[in-house]
Length: 314
Ligand code: NDP
Image (tube, helix red, strand yellow):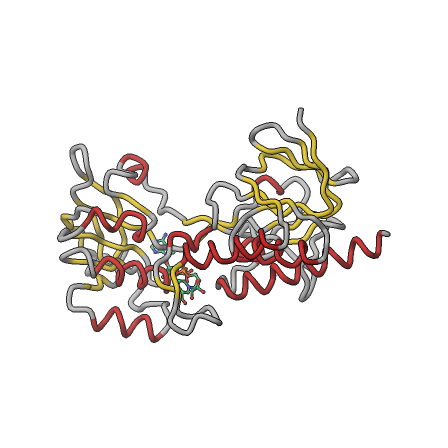
């Protein structure tokens, strides 16, 4: 088994991980960063980013992540492709094993594994995944030019996905289970102003149908209300999920304290977890803000916490 050692192992490559890598490499901790399943994180699947400070004209998710990655490399961060498949936080130094069998011994670990898009849990979603069902409009929207698609969800992500798709598809349906959108007012306005987006309020998806490819969704309006419950089929070419995210914490569960929804618990206003030397940054520990800039800010905090921890140990 190949073995490597580092003062700081960073797991995950979103804005939190890369910012932690910039700070820890400038502090001479010689960090090793494992990029994980989705190099660059969730932002690589978004389009325009208009609210990251320092980009007055806006930028794109992939460009922002490329900039952060190059900035981390400039100070000597060792960025590697690979996934951490198990950890042992009961030993010193802390240990992590990668998917190619490498054993990493680390004085500190910064967990920045982010969160992953949720699905409704319908068996049909699996059946039509890649055949009409997607959780990433910016990745797959291109295939639906001039077609009819639906986006599920009422938050900012759903509105963003619907807006993106409205520039490609002929018709976009936004399927919202409540009678209102949860998204910010500015996103709501943009969606409402789009002539080819139709919002289906009080509507749930109960199934999908189609021969080989997705051909439509079975919907129910006013689910459970006996007086006005209405079942109907909506013919569709594409069905996009945008109903929130699940934190990527399974591998740490045996050691790290998580909250009821699986997010890592941190101490007060810090990135300190229940295991000394292990810190958490970004969406993996934040279900409230979940922004690129807040993730980057907590990546900086994790790096400073790791640096302070090492100094204290010395
Ligand atoms: P949210 O948790 O904000 O919204 C999830 C949406 O999905 C809600 O409308 C929710 O409905 C709905 N939903 C959840 N589960 C189901 C289900 N089983 N069936 C049907 N609908 C369901 O997640 P987002 O990903 O939209 O946003 C996360 C965070 O990221 C937010 O803070 C958001 O502001 C931010 N964000 C900001 C952006 C920007 O500034 N440009 C872009 C994207 C995200 P209900 O309301 O009924 O609970």
